Image (cartoon, rainbow, N blue to C red):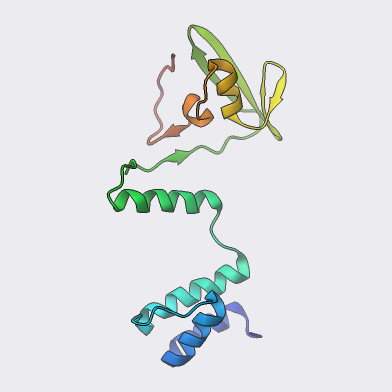
Length: 153
């Protein structure tokens, strides 16, 4: 398609049903659902055109959408939205475990704990506790709302 993205999208409503089905096959690599109304096909195709041109959703966004979808299906998943904090280099994380304070520094390449570099918080949480932990959960980063509370193991 030689037209610019906006032009391609603007033309979609004028396409016949068969043209929309053909474009669906081209963009998705499979046939469109047979009962799909053209009014629904147009926004799906518009999104797919943009997705192919500019890229899709971030993996973290896709994971959150899957989690929400499972919660709506009634599976045992928390329906509360999970807030993942984006940590900037230079941030310090503090956690008290069994009375002992632990400090982790966020670096450009990962994390630093007691002079050693780590690629994940889970590695550090395991080193501190001796068991497998979710690092973000251990350091209190998986919150449904920002709260200030003392974390003590």
